[in-house]
Length: 184
Ligand SMILES: [Zn+2]
Image (tube, rainbow, N blue to C red; front, side):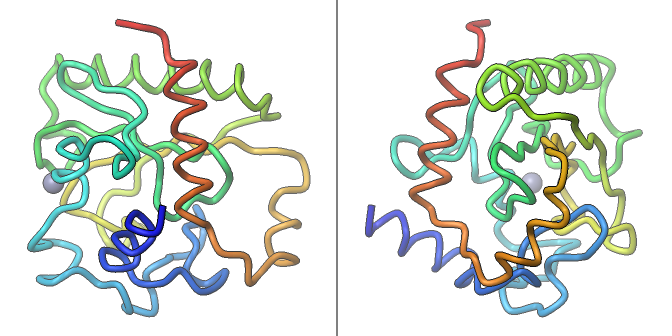
């Protein structure tokens, strides 16, 4: 696990507080500490292009489709916060092909069903931030957020303001969701 933890730190910087966690309403990357080389608009190494190539203990990919995949957010707002991404490096929703659009929608629905099975959330936030100005962390590669919500979770977060999201917890979450994901 140490290797995984080190790798994550190397890739993303040490998550060090609430201000570094992703939320739908506050930008995570304000501090710029883990700003990718080349910036968010044109990152030198796109994490969503790299994610499908990882395997074993390194991967946060929950499910792989033909044109899109589901991956855990490294900066989850809540446990089970998934991102549905096309494999293709495209930024804008209008750039998706019809087939990508259909599979992205299907994966979003499956993600909801899987997370409901595993952790019984009370609701979800679904959505895409288009462009840095709209809050997209990695604006260059489209990603649809699937965020499970529980009553009171928004109030809970500030209380645990210094809580770190540990790579081990993400790996455990990934395995649970991946096991619950229906075979294609
Ligand atoms: Zn990309």
